[in-house]
Image (cartoon, rainbow, N blue to C red; front, side, top):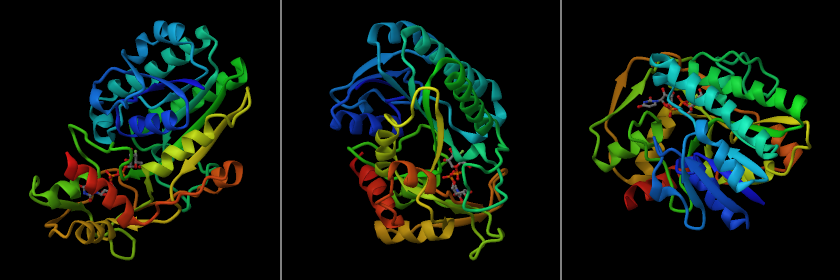
Length: 317
Ligand code: UFG
């Protein structure tokens, strides 16, 4: 299939681009390189440096049969401090993209949604039918795009899938996480293990969990990429599907610290800090729906496998 990947110079977008190329797809990457890296775009894909707001001429030229839409601002803290960035890029940018798709006659899309659309869950594991009550602007902006996709499916026969990622980790195809502003647990812990950061601050030890630290559902980026390839042809015109993507089990921050120590063989100095605002105690996905519909089963579910691949990537850089 001829596909356009927005955000293909970023962490997840570049891994999925590599998987698409391996699957025989023809890929054009649209990325403004505001947070992505040109050298992350896999060889074999064509990079067009442009923002979502200027995507219409690109779609008119490329005429893709489908779009995989990763490009977004994705920092929860930043979304609270500068919400306009999230409304403009995530919501305004996505609207411009959907309109560009409509003009170019492209109606198939896979969208990177997030667990943050649910907010604080009433029940765990979280099903796709759970209420969506985002607690930050990042989650609200992604939820708005999910709603856009539903209406475009109804009104314009779009075939759409929203994949709601939980905590993505690991590396694949020589590509991994490298953000200028790092806020995520795994890369920060690995920087401490590598000696480029002094200590890891654990945000809160008084949560109602067995060891008092937050529990998250970590999914390997390789498994996440496989889900995108399965989702791409799945929906019929007029259909908008929503799937959670997690591995179905939860690990605490303390268990992650232990895994990083085991994998790296380095001491990991830890400082106990207060809770980070807006962190739910426990976020674990039910991925039953995508398993039942598309046969997706995560393979790399061991915490040590996720950490080992991220560590190898970090070491090589
Ligand atoms: N944590 C620490 N110390 C750190 C960084 C993180 O203790 O230095 C803890 C957090 O408090 C949290 C866990 O590690 O309990 C995971 O934190 P991350 O920042 O790695 O990930 P989040 O669970 O906060 O965020 C993820 C996605 C977001 C998404 C969110 C949904 O990365 O994009 O889930 O709630 F919005």
